[in-house]
Length: 402
Ligand code: PMT
Image 1: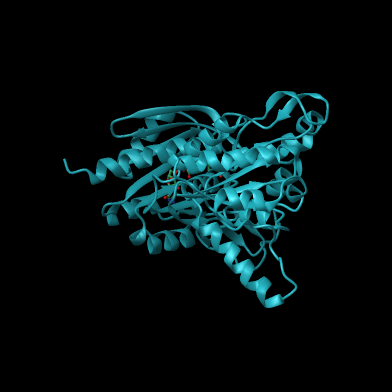
Image 2: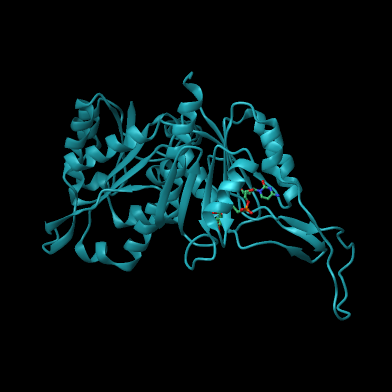
């Protein structure tokens, strides 16, 4: 087991030396990465001596271009080999870079390049901690599944008293161990996830679509990656950024989604159909823009039911559907569970304000053939974790001989 320990520039940087030892005591190898500012507080030699590994101090450390290219490639390779990234102490600057996706030094590049679980232990002045910008950055990171070890309250190095003191080292290490434990339960699985809406063309300028933002599906994709899965993400048009490590197929129409899903289905072990696929499409697409000449009638036909086709081709895969309902929620979901031959269905009441479509939050009921799990309103990230917990359980049941 190997983790990268990012040390950024705060007075608490010296405390990270003990974190190296605590992790090594648990049999974990530690690769230390220091920002330039961290090196003003503690010498890299201290961490090199403690960790027994060369400390990474920058992305480009040499005047020689070839050496820099080799170093960048070698350093990025580290992103693929670590089991977790811990940043302690994490300054306000590091949190802001992570939240915004700025990659201008080794640590921020590693954050973007790795799919391993991430733990950050912030430490800073109380006013910086309480600032709306810092809190907004933390919220962004939390939503992406980054584990935050909250700082303690007390006397701070700046002379003020309040929140901002680096959490106790034992607390930080416990969080890393929890992240490592949670990371592996989808390793070896190939999870196919559909996300977002579809668009069905009426004419060259108009289409039928729905309110899906893709957030629920992308949260599932990110969560499955963090738990060790290979993720095949088939997405309708969205304005949000997909997780970098997901293998992305972009589609527009229900028919394109059908083709992509059927192509990737044989290599998948789990399918989660979060996408809000259009149920109807115009029977014919006009080749020219339809003129406004009084009332018009649009003739619609049903789109192919992708889940029904999967049911016919299904071998050992676990197939999970989502159901967007506005009435008789549980009854309708149960009907879909059996009519679409699903292993589980995740139903959300899309008539409720603030959850479901185009929101960061959701409230769902996960129904399988022998269990009903209520997930009260929470972030889509948390909902994704509950869905994946159920997937892991169903996979275990499917592989244990009766
Ligand atoms: O994208 P967000 O803004 O985050 O919103 C998330 C969500 C509300 C879209 C999501 O949580 C959700 O409920 N997704 C399912 C939407 C939907 O299409 O529900 P449905 O009850 O109409 O369909 C049931 C299932 O059949 C779905 O898994 C759907 O992907 C599938 N289906 C639907 C039509 C079709 N032609 N083929 C299908 O396979």
